[in-house]
Length: 217
Image (cartoon, rainbow, N blue to C red; front, top):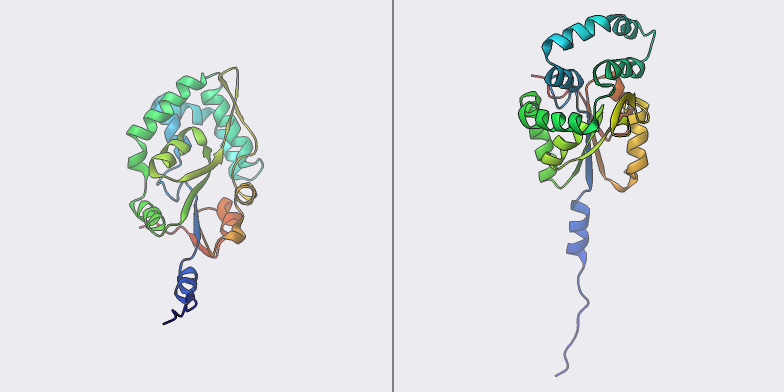
């Protein structure tokens, strides 16, 4: 008796392909994942409270000008970095950033934000932090949580911080530019973005699901 070979039914496999959506989630860091601006917290941690408050008294004209929109956030940020960290050896600075991640960062993370990150990871989504803060203290935390990191970079010369940024501040349109440079969003079925300030708006516009200040209790 001849054996009859029936064609393989691939409909089940096709249905499974349709069910599995490829997703990616982009999270702002300061104020969205954390309760406070981590640049300020890094300064307090590394320089102490007295030097922090005295430094910001000296910098108050720049901070006021920024509030009045007379100068940009990026220019003010550079003034702050120069005041506190110019001529700081990178190796020492990085050691203190690593200690900050170990001893302080966990107290700043919003539980609801961490829960959302874990839920995305459980669904098989890629998860990326996109932050204006420096990679020196953001990237190490992201590595622990198994997330990718896009962030601002600090300029160094001969192993010493200059107080300047290495490239643009990763805020506003720069956030979306950096995302589009690294990711082909057309490859994803679902794009989630989480932010909490107007500097996150260009990033939120990339999303199929956008959330503004989502983790505030």
